[in-house]
Amino acid sequence: MQFHAFSLLQRLALTAVLGLACAFGAHAAPDPNGAPDVFVQQTADAALQVIKNDDRVKRGDLNRVNQVVDQYILPYVDFEKTTRLAAGPHWRQATQAQRQALSQAFRGTLIRTYSGALTGVDNSTRIQTLPLRGNAAQADDLVVRTTVSQSNGQPIAVDYRLEKTPAGWKIYDLNVEGIWLIQNYRNQFSQEINQNGIDGLIRALNQRNAS
Picture 1 (spheres, helix red, strand yellow):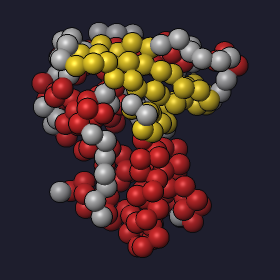
Picture 2: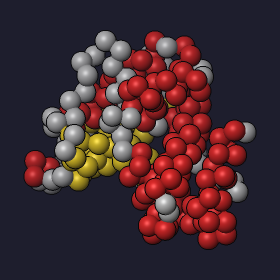
Picture 3: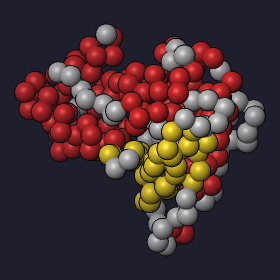
Picture 4: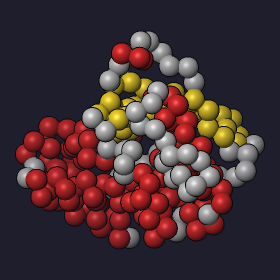
C-alpha cells in the first residue's frame, strides 16, 4: 500500500517536527511546564539552530535524524498518542506488542517522509508563534499557531496540538495549511487494517521504511 504524505510545500513546513527540542547548548532546554506558546517557540528556535548548523541533518541523513529524534524529540512528542489517534478504533483491537510495533513503524514513516524537508532550511528560515486563542491558561488541550517563513516563499501556517500531561506539555498532532497529520493518515490506516489487519499495517509501514 502506498501511503500518501503531504506536498513538498507542506513538508518544508514540518522541519520543526524532526528537530523539535534539539537544544545542543545554543539554546536553553525547552520548558514543557511553561506557557505552551513559549514552549513551542523554544523548541522551534532550538530546532532551527541545529538544522542550520548540522550538515548531516540538512542532507536528510536518516541515521543522524534518528539520533536527533531519539535524544531530543521523544521527551516532547507523544508518538504513541499520535499513532493511537491515527489508528482510530482499531487501536483497541491491538495487543500491547502490536501497539508498540505500530508506534515504532509509524515513527519511522514520519521520519523518512519528512527528513527530505530539512534540505529546505536556510539561514532565513524563521518560525514565529501567534497569540493563543481562548482561555489558554485553563486549557489542558490546545492549539498553538505558528508561521514558518523563508526568503524564497510565502509564510506557511503550521498549528501544533498539545496536551498537558503530568510531565508537562506534549505535542501529538499538527496542521499544515489546513491538513492535520493524524487525519491525513487515519483513512489510509483504516483501509490497510480492514484488508490485512494490524499486522498487515505494521508490515506495510516497515516495508515502506526499508525502501
